Amino acid sequence: MSNGILVFVEHRGGVFNKTSFEAVAAAQNLGAQLQQAITGAVLGSNMATQAEQISSYDLSKVVYANNAKLAEYTPDGYSDAMEHVIRELDPQFVIMPHTYLVRDYAPKLAARFGKALISDCVRAEVANNTVTFTRRIFLGKIGADDGSDGQPPVFVTFQSGAYRPDQARKGSAPVETKEVEVGEIRMSAETPFQEVKQAVDLSKAEIIVAVGRGIKSKENIALAEKLAAALGGDIAASRPICDAEWLPIDRQIGSSGQTVAPKLYVALGISGAIQHLVGMKNSGVIVAINKDPEAPIFDIADYGIVGDLFDAVPALTEEIRKIKGQT
Image (tube, rainbow, N blue to C red; front, side):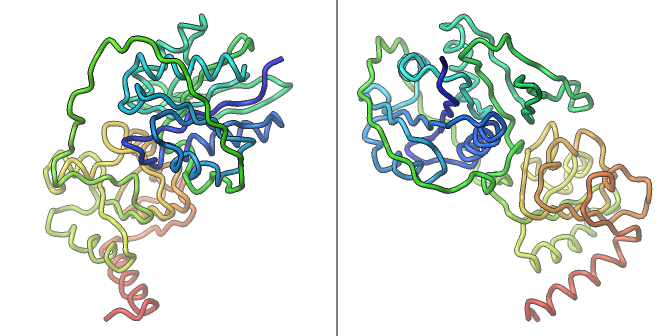
């Protein structure tokens, strides 16, 4: 009989990013529905300290797969190590974040078990002991429900932003170190890709103020920047703003930009096209200001102001400054 859920906790150079903890949250959510235990898997070399970091989450245990060949990521090395862990633990589900690294090696891993990979999911729901995974297709306009034959292991990846890192429950778990066998590494790693200096990772922002067509001109973006400064947040935009080069492309949110899940997302003059919504719909609290009462953004907003943003934003900024004692 298969044993619970295994979650692959990804790191880059020994550093876990938000997708690592989103995957933990996804596994915990599924585990709670199925009443199954969750085991974390960390791969690497000389990573004992980092494995201990993951042990502070609500898991049954953390398996640290150690081998010198895992010091740098390669699809051969990671596939060998994860295959070893999966065959020993025999989990029903293998949960992974939908990252470039996972997309590189997970199909290879799944093929070793004669399985398909259910990828880029946004949620998992259990009914009558059957798990249904939902993926977005056609630029997020349609939700497609996928399942499996139920035979373990079932390999699943979750889209960035489908769960928030702060949804991962804390706890205490023992760490079990395993010396795993890794075969021939047929490729060598090149220098890691480095983002340009001006690139912004909005996925780490806790507060985002985003602007859309309703801002009307590049000069008016200053209104949003003042609000973002008062809130201690970052500025972002919908695609038309970046296409017009009013803000850099690295500020774009949506299906062709970044996917974010901040604690607070303020949408100014954004109508709420599906291409934008798929990039921010999992935000903790969504506040929308738009003069069109029928704007789709209000369908997902927690709080909404139907009105002219040029009246609302300065007033909102001033009130926030007063509350925070800013001058």
